[in-house]
Image 1 (cartoon, rainbow, N blue to C red):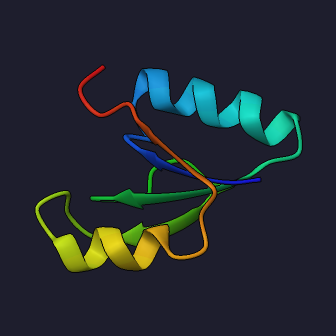
Image 2 (image 1 turned 45 degrees about the horizontal axis):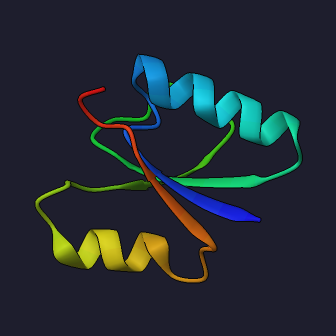
Length: 68
């Protein structure tokens, strides 16, 4: 499964991403800056509908962990 995570570089999102990867899932995320490896990062902003729509293409699930 391909999972799009909003907030994947934060504390909660990073842990969720680690567990999903360990279970064999592919992770995609939009980040302000790439601070943690092992995901398909798309540089952008949560305020950019275009960046979010592009990053979510082909995804099976979305998790929103920003601000968690």
